[in-house]
Image 1 (cartoon, rainbow, N blue to C red):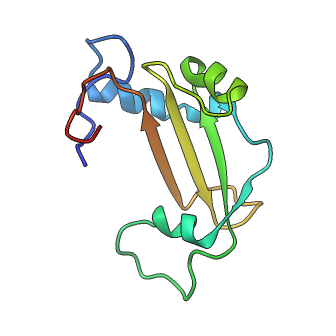
Image 2: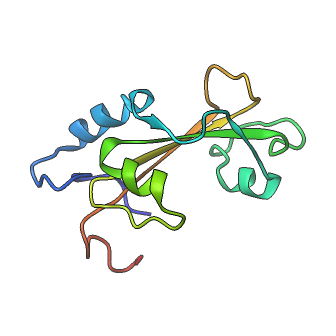
Length: 121
């Protein structure tokens, strides 16, 4: 996996600090699912935090909330299989229960320019 090192939008001048600033405001974006969704244990296991001591069965009864920025909102909310435009940012919160106020883990995804990382597709 390559570290974040450049823009997440069409602007070539974005610095990593600008990307982090945008990501820090994800709670102001469109919430895709109004209520947290229960995660299948196999899916929850795929987004586990790195090497933390966990109780037995840490992947049961997890929930997610998904946020999308303005750039990706139309694709996310109107298409079954969206093709996101460059600059789309999506944040998934992994929650320990439906009423959690703080996520256990955040997963951030962003759409880069075509050809950004040809080795990974």
